[in-house]
Image 1: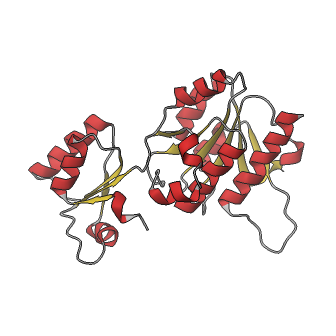
Image 2 (image 1 turned 120 degrees about the vertical axis):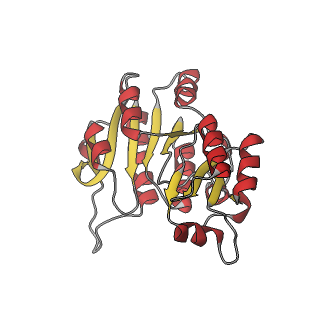
Length: 247
């Protein structure tokens, strides 16, 4: 569940949030409503670079909770401001290090995202890139789960993960994604400028994003179940990258 203090419910409150320059993370609008106030919200969202997500009334009812009068409009505010991808690269340059970036393709659980941001910070990654839509943003739950790491870790939000990977390849980065069908991570060369791609908790890395990656890494497993939690897998792969960067 989203933290209530970062949820804006109703047309006027959402309009006021945009006009006050609040960092709106996601905007939900009810399908089929196109009156004046909603048109104003869409216009303000466009100015802020936010793409509305059109959903059924039942989805808004669920977010608003019992007795919540959402009027067909709900917005989520970010707990922290986002960095940009160039700022992440600049940070790596300022440390005279080869870029090491986490790319998270559709992480939906705020606890997983918070744990991954903490891992990124402790592993020396220069930043984290997350997907704009159909993924959790920087909520207060993410901030709490990161245990302070969010305040020291650059997080960028992008519209298209695949396109971002292509742009980063021009900066000299190689990309490895996690997938059970890949090569053992211990057999891969993970040194140099690298992006670690972790997919959605249920579906993994999307097909189009996987096709953009240069390497597909699997984690050897010997138990009776066939997968790790997304944030745990992220940590295991991240520290294999760290091990190789140290050698």
